[in-house]
Image 1 (cartoon, helix red, strand yellow):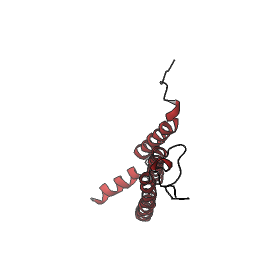
Image 2 (cartoon, rainbow, N blue to C red; image 1 turned 45 degrees about the vertical axis):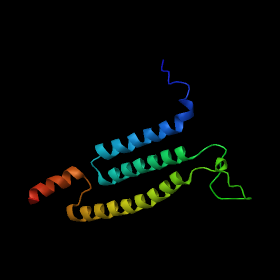
Image 3 (cartoon, rainbow, N blue to C red; image 1 turned 180 degrees about the vertical axis):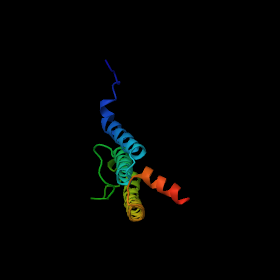
Image 4 (cartoon, rainbow, N blue to C red; image 1 turned 30 degrees about the horizontal axis):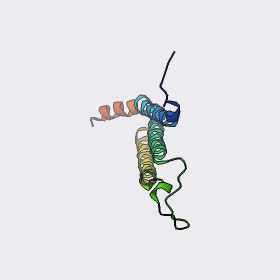
Length: 127
């Protein structure tokens, strides 16, 4: 019987975000289809943002917006993880758009989304 320790149940969301990362990484490495690789990359991104958001949240605290003159740091969460997540999402959308546009160009040239087939055609062309 598996025994994970007394704190495992408190860390289930973090463990699930790590599992999501492994699923995305495996998808990125094992799929020959370029669209599926992009999906795997996005799953990895999402798992990292979930992990950062989970680490930045503290039960009983609120967003760092001063209301009613309360300025005690014990009442607010740390805003840095939230800012990192928002910045990461913007960068991720841009990278995904670039990957999709390059995939469209590859498909127009080689008429395939299979990375192995594209590599074979490149070798035939001598590139």
